Image (cartoon, rainbow, N blue to C red; front, side):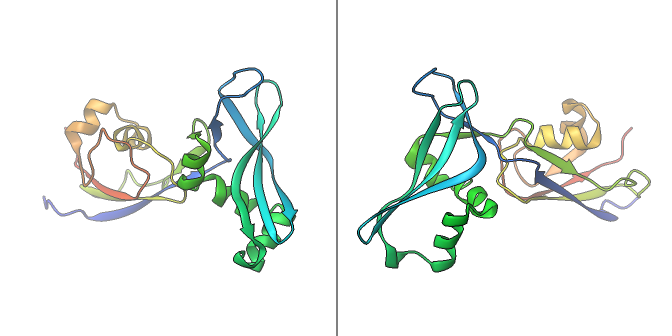
Length: 186
């Protein structure tokens, strides 16, 4: 039996919805907020613009603002981007929400619980062993490779540690693509 992988399978981690924000509400002290419909607010003061992303508390429905751009000259905006802010473009909402600089500036983290899914080929178990898998992330979903692999293969985490050779540490969270090889079971 050859030790080289015979088959390369693609796995894709996809976002199913926007993640919740871990952000303290000033009214009810709840720790979760959502972007709701994904709306921006643009305010003009002379030739300067402020842009905020509106978020809503999951518990009390209070609306808060996350600063996207502050006191920026109108000429510093790309016209397509500015139009996206005005029409509440869903792709622009997702891009801004997933921006780590926005999260750091506004002091929130993303809660990805139940906001993603793993798409894997359906008939891969009939392939010759060992099997090489390439995992691709469409969005920066932080997940431990060990748990992702265990979920995708239907194995226990001990079996994953025993049968899988991975190019990243299995126990550290990652949101970047990685590859691993599954060896045949006993």
